[in-house]
Length: 337
Image (cartoon, rainbow, N blue to C red; front, side):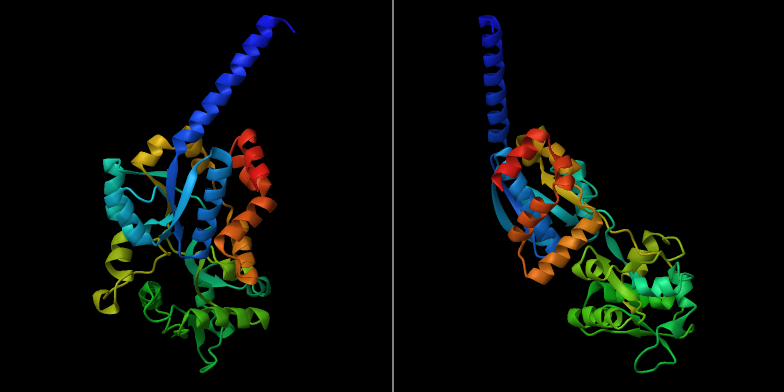
């Protein structure tokens, strides 16, 4: 090899080394919100491992909850990253923060196939392929007999005190379900809601009710979310009526469920200091709904916390996460596991 060529290659290697170290140093110390629900806990820990092993960041996890985490980011600039921020509860002030450029959405869909709605078991749809929408199901209360009054169909709503209790009760009225032979059933608790679904699925019985995804229950039972068969009737109807107490919702209109929006949100400081490579990772980091639900089943069955689940995800799903980073960064992550 000629000396000039060797010098050029050595110089290039040194340049790359220093530029890579500079990129990692720029990431620095960051805080990530570790949410108090399973999917958010998993995502936060996946981010932690990838940012530490792949980009050289120093990550501290802080407890996360939707409204308090947003308030802290908005007022104090910490934590730096909220990976799974469900924005419906903070939409108005969050949009103001986006407009002021104090906070930024780096990913408006970090999980596919998520959202709230009305579900039936896969076996029910297989036995009754005509049940393609909620409107179809509402014609057949006889297929979902209430255990206390089999002459009526049972629709399993939300436990008292949950925000979704109001929405389900108002939609029950909007679709005139009582006139159509239905009864709105309060499952009493989260355990009661889960138990009613599990019992029906395991016994091969029909079940119709409210749930949300991503969750271990939807993943475990492979539940089918039904389109409502009617369009979303507008935010004025939803926010001004469906989501309120019955006394404040005199005339609810039939509507599809409001869209659930989840964003990965970062502070202005982290967007600047984290570096373009880290921001590109966060933009590409999308968990397929089926993969997320499978991991939530694993967490429930194995009683696994976010850190162990993140290790399991990265160890068994490199065909998913390796597309979020460059091959060089992927190799660093694999070597660090």
